[in-house]
Image 1 (cartoon, rainbow, N blue to C red):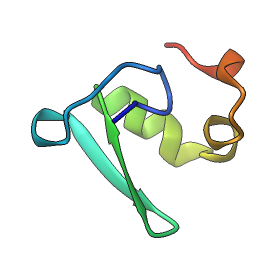
Image 2 (spheres, one colour):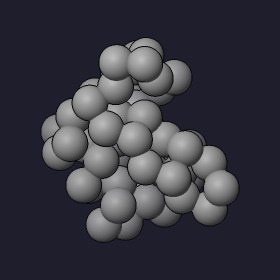
Image 3 (cartoon, rainbow, N blue to C red):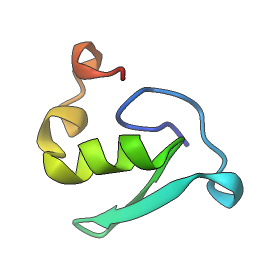
Image 4 (cartoon, rainbow, N blue to C red):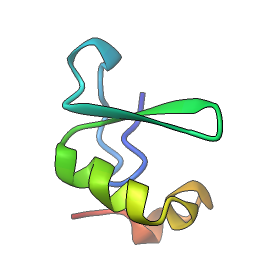
Length: 54
């Protein structure tokens, strides 16, 4: 799985955080990435990687 915020590869079994959005579970490398996603997921789901990064 790919962390939608920073683009890191994340193993679901060892992910630092997970959050369900519109029926899909997303996995994150850190709680910080999950919090950024939860605040405004649309930019991270648009497919434009320019908004990625911490």
